Every structure is written in C-alpha cells, then in structure tokens.
Image 1 (spheres, rainbow, N blue to C red):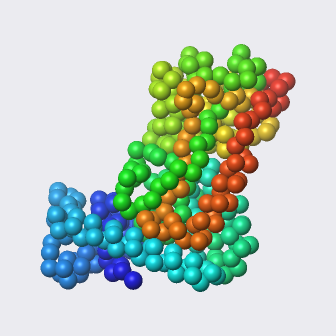
Image 2: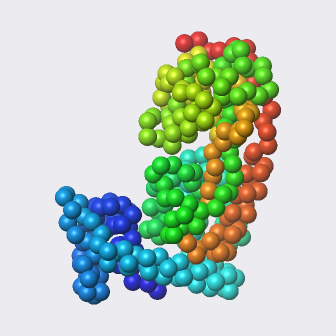
Image 3: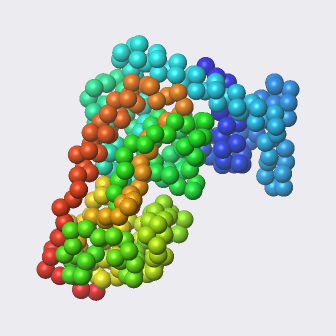
Amino acid sequence: MIDPRLAVLQLVAHHGTVTAAAAALHYTPSAVSYQLRQLAEELGVELVTQHGRGIQLTGAARTVLRHAEALHAQAERAHAELAALSGDPSGTFTLCGFSTAATRLLPPAAAALRERYAQVDVRIIEAEPGRCFDLLLAGDADLALVINTPDTPSTSDGRFEQRRLLDDPLDLVVPSHHHLAERSAVTLADAADEPWIVGRPGSTYHDLVRAACTSAGFTPNIAHYADEWDTGTALVAHDFGLILVPRLARLHDDWPVTRIPLRGDPTPARRILAATRRGHREHPLIAASLSTISTTASDLLPPPAIDRTAASGPAGP
C-alpha cells in the first residue's frame, strides 16, 4: 500500500548507517543505497549527504519521514480494520521478546493463537529489546515484549505504540545459609555491603541491577559477571555473591539458594511494555495475544513464598 522505499529511509534514519539498515532489512548495502537514490530522484530532493565516513539526513528527508510515519500508521490501522472484518485472519504473525518474555509469556500466547486461528502461522523470535524494535520496523515482527533500556526508542517515539503491560518485581537470591535467608522480605540496602553478581557491562541485566542499587542509595560491589540466571544462581550457591532476579525468571531447582521478595518504596521492578508499530495495536491477533499474555502474567506473578531449595547448605566450591 505504501512505497517500500519509505521503509528503507526509515531504517536508515533509525540505524544511522546504510550497512546497519541493510542488515535489518536483509538487503545488501548497495540495494539500500540504490533505493535511496531512486526515492530522492523521484521526489526531486536530496535525502542524505556524506558526513565523514557516514551519512547525514537532510531537512527534506526529515520532512519525508514525518509524513511517512503518518502514512504507515494509517496503513496499519487499515490492515487492522480489514483483519477484524474478515473474522478469519491468515498469514504469518510474529511475536518477539527478550529471553524471559520469550520463555514464560510468549509460548502460551502463541499456542492460544494457533488453536484459535488455524490459518495463522505463528512465530516467536527471542531478541534483546533494541533488536525487537528493529524487527517491528522492518516488518519482521508484529508484537514485541520489551523493557526500556538506553538503546530503545522512547515511549513518545511516533513510530511505535508502547504501553505498560506489567511490572515484574525483582527478588534477591542469597545462599540458603545466608543471614538474610530467614527473612520474609528485605530491602536492597540490607545487602549493600555484599558482593554482587551482575550481567556484563552494556547488557540489559547489568543496567537493571545498577539502576536498582543506585535508587537504593549505594553502588554495588561487583564481584562476578553472569548473563544467565542459571550461571548466576550457581555462583550464589557457591558463596560468590548475591544476585537480583525478576520474579518471572525461573531458577534451577537443585541449587541451595533462597529467593527473597524485596520491599521498599518503590519496590524494585522491571517494567515490561507491549510494543507495536503505530496503528497496528487494534489488529485482532494483537488483542488476542495481549489478553493471553496478561492472563499468563497474573498466574505467574503472585508474591512468592520464600523459596529455600536444598536448604541443607551451600554446595562446595
């Protein structure tokens, strides 16, 4: 319905380079450059200029982009209305989300869609939040579950609709023999002097823990780096430090650790957002997905009982 070269321009603007836009679109860089030249010639304006080793958008390009956003949003609304009128959607519908969402929330939603809409090919892509937005822009995903990071578009970005889906509280995980393990709840400040296990610098998990500790009034003493919950839990079980885990995250049952709810004002949590291309949210498949995801989340997120697995003591080093 809309000139696909406008989407190419949008991806170039989003990524800042032709090479990155080409990767997101599964094109070659030369194909992206060619489409930009074609669009510029047809519009009779210059869209990009050379800037050092990269490119820079012109004022004309930004004007085109502003109108392209409105056109794409209107087209998405039209698709959503047509899908609602048909009553029997078909084609491919893709859900994407970061690891915990892709493990705990998206499979039930995909299964419900598959059962309800026999003509729909439902797919799931696990991806970091920044990549999820790339997938939405490129048309490779329809609904994304994300959390805000420094690398993701702001909630005011006109290309997307981002709405709060749920808050996933953080729990403190300590060795089962730790002096905090008998408490029904703790504050982050209670663990301010402990060694911490966090994700690698630049990762969403690293930023999450640093931000939570900063809001509690201290800088964590980072002793080890682990990006996977199982790895972090194993380190806790062997007395290498403490970790924060979102309540949706499952831990390995065999490690002698205790998972303790956090209290405080505000209680540390990561906010999970549902993101779509603007205008696409009213599509019946998205509405059905969000309904199942909300139900699944409410079942998974009651306040946990204190979890003291293998309480006989820590594993040896």
